[in-house]
Length: 266
Image (cartoon, rainbow, N blue to C red; front, side, top):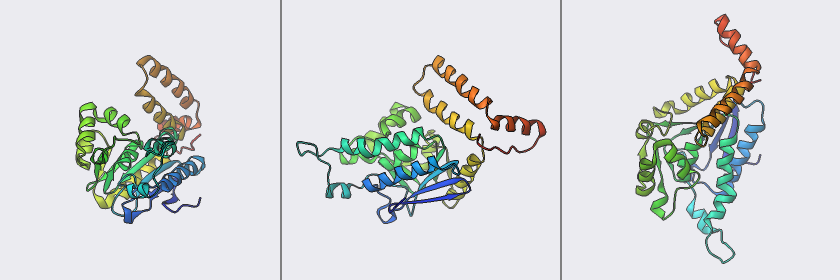
């Protein structure tokens, strides 16, 4: 991969993907979005990678779309009008779907501000961990836009329609502590402990039963749309897969023998 705006490394079965525009607080350009998709594809295809961490270099996670870059070369429709919907259809929406469908667990490590599409990318991870000084901001209304990058989907499901509406309409910062209290994110840690804590979680997942982890992710994501009977059927199907895996046999044997299991991801 020829990456200019993203850093990518693999460490003990964990792919660490970092936004690398720290001078711009990791504001996202279209080139960055393309590179991020490439990085997720590489992690998905690499059998050595069992978990993924998404974070930002410098003082912030991401301030969202780089409006200055957009104004330099705006996307226009056939009538010459600004077409931000094209940007979403071409760059953002496929990436959001890729994150949700990727079988390997994704943890976002939010250092500093996560605003606009940056906030919603962070929240689209399977687990979101924030530094104590971090904050989340649905900044869209402040520039006359609606929340995108899945914001109108994830927010009401995670925190209910009133809180989602308040964040979207008021455009005010939400502290990491408040986000945790509302159930929007998994945990908050001291700033200096963010990456050690997240990498510890990611390594634990990387050493875990990959068959079960992929199916847990699939089941939890499906639950938001399924009726109970359909979800129960899905649980049966996915549990059948897990029960036939080598990891289950190893996990059961380790439980009986009172030892730590050695999962192979098969």
